Image (cartoon, rainbow, N blue to C red; front, side, top):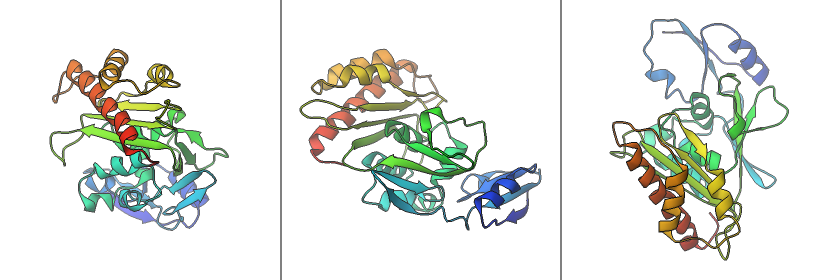
Length: 264
């Protein structure tokens, strides 16, 4: 039960307000507005903190915490993996509500955005931290206020894929890939996978095997992923099925980068 909404004007005020019990940061409200609880909750709105912009920061893009999924989808400068990941939220209404910071703060098991950020070597900007934190090192239990993320700009190639029963169903498997180059040799390859049951991994051994080599046939990539990934089964598929599909999706995504023939 929401008993009050605070609207701080600075990040410091927002962090100070969060120190109290029964408080939560409010971005788009997608998750908070869907909760049903009798416990009193004080929401801390981020609407006045200026976190809703997408800006160039050197060779990277800076996405503020309240940037919506729809903004990401509409930004032509955005890496393809991010645009594809947010597009997996089929409802435009939800895309206009969901925010980057909210997704990272909540860290849902079936997120498509987070594996894409992982594959892009994204860094997270946190209140009170002088340096951005690599998303792979993020301490999700700390409860820090997310101010935004930094992602590389094109010409990095990238893609995201997911499996779900319908366009509006939760995902049961998500893969994301990126590469500095695909031809004539793979370079700076990144592969992020989520079994949507809490396991989110970078397949560094596979990445190292691929880097510096020509793009292997899809069947070979499928075998490499199948040997390296151990997903958990769920109601949508066995571990063997998800392992096989993960290989197919990664192979398809990497070969799609070659076929695109241009930066994302």
